[in-house]
Length: 295
Ligand SMILES: [Zn+2]
Image (cartoon, rainbow, N blue to C red; front, side):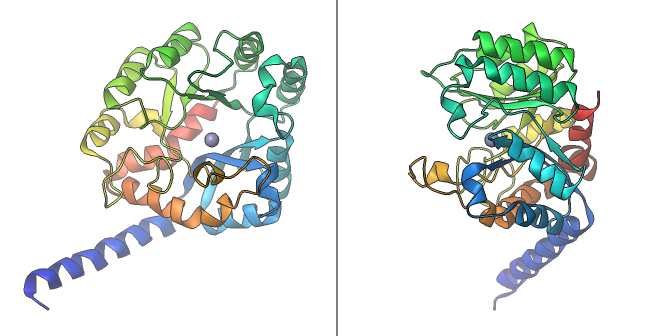
């Protein structure tokens, strides 16, 4: 072994040791997970709770399809599991929630009883219904404001304006922009951050096995993303989002083995987190999520 490659080898071992130390010692707020009807066939409620515990997850935000699956997770796991009300109240609810008044009834009853701690994830895909001025969605916004809970919103758009309109129009609602790193580049996200104090940004599902877009080959953040994160360390969170079907070309009625990939996703997020200064890393991995959930 030549000296240079030996040095590289040792550096690599050292980095790996460093990363595993951080993973072992620091709690992680996995701020974007799902437990859906099609996960359930592959991974039981108890198995999901065990996977999270094994990975030192001290807090997690979960959305279920149907919504009450998130409640089951909390009942089995404990109060560190934070269910958000998902407007997808039946297995195919993602297709028709925006026309269904029942969604509002259930949201109101789940929020007033304190079962749910937020609303989401709500998806708005380019070229598909609904739009953000949809009647049901406007009522969900009103409920978020009334019960002082955050919303997790997924907007596919070619620029920041759609989300920005929302966060500017609802300054009293904390809004999480899900999955930054796609069409919205750091310059777009910066506009959202500078204009909306009530907006946070999440990097869920931006791992190289699914949507990618935020990191280099060594899984550390691309320079422009890193710069933005360092500029706004209080405004970023992340999560593993173990939904796998999206990449397999599967049909809607097959099971989703996403939870079996948890470790890989978790390690990926810790790799880029570990490349950040300690203070920033702790904010993104843990503290910022508490701020969002605080009433
Ligand atoms: Zn999601």
